[in-house]
Length: 598
Image 1 (cartoon, helix red, strand yellow):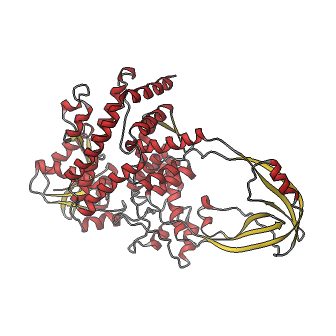
Image 2: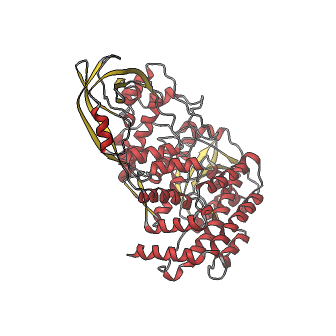
Image 3: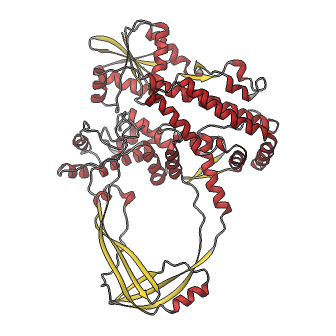
């Protein structure tokens, strides 16, 4: 029997459908198994539900009151079966015992590689003989699935080591500091409540709190600018100065000289607005948060469901370059019968050159539609989630079409007029050709044309006023902006960034309101205490160092035990610094907890 292990039930079902003409479903230990014939042999496909194993401490080390938190730095976590995955493991063992060939068809990223290895461990526990092969595909389509099984490969153990090393580091650091913070105020916490620390989660909170404190501490300052209605060659133009005057009197003295002047420059330059680069995960999350009002976690969850249903390619990718093997015209032809059909057919009638970024993760192409679909079809398949599923699918399609489209063309316009020692300016633009904006409305720019005037033409001020303004605090951090900062500092991966934001929300450290990240009093207190007494635990650059070190396992074959020991030693020092200031931290946290309750 051929055993095929997929990451989710829907993918296992799709594999059975595409490799076998028909299939039957049975349940083994409650897990659906899809049986079919493949190459004249019996085959069975089952889907897991993510990781089936995890790292944990030994039972006694999990008794918080028995073991001081600092002792966790000396402990070695154990690889154990997840409680919620027991039925999957039982089903996998039952099938593996009868298998004479095993294909691991888990997702084609480092996390999928680790899950594939976990599945291989289960297989080997009951079957030492069957060859185990890895299959990789970027879309759940007949062509991709069939091709993947015709060119199986081996497990990439370096990627597995990277994931397992990260899991052990995050467990140790998260557990040690979570226990320290919780035990410091445990008598004031509700039963079952704890204060959590996470080596990715907490630096994310730190960036949000830093912005909020900048806003709260901001002191606005008044300043004054000049605005004028100016007549040039029979045209009336609204102009303003770019000088900030410190007082109204200073502004009024300058305004008094704005009477008769001359046009110094009149520029009308064509400017191309380039279409977006091919779509990668973080940009999908950022743009969906900003333009569709769907938070990052929900966006990726929906994108993964669209992938498993065969509508888009694998959504966890860092690549912004279409591979030469990707038939772009075939994708356009597949879109021809959908709402996007007329635009797709228009592209097919002309030659096009796709945009190109500079990132290639070597594993996956950018995100693109793998099957044309109508809104009615998506709404029917996804039910209650249909509206958001369509919004994400529609965005992916439009983004793909935009990358094959011509630039938008605008005329940038600027007029400058000199009135003695005061210069006044007006800026505008005229849209010449909408280009990709026709299919990608979120980036469309407005027409704000200025009249045509000549340099040297006389200018007469009809009305001049001094306008009072105030400097403004930085805006609240948007989720889109936060994701960009996480990417910049290397906090998390394209697969986990949204989870770190969601964890902060779940723990009550911040809220998401209309796409903006708002820290709670508890979140501010925790972050402030760490900034004051152990900044290394919350500064974004520290996590970036760990991520770079983890990448060295794959790129430079750095031994995981060496890396784990180095990280533990560094964070043990931070722990001792925190421990020495326990009473100060306790006081700050208690104040926040009391406010939080009120």
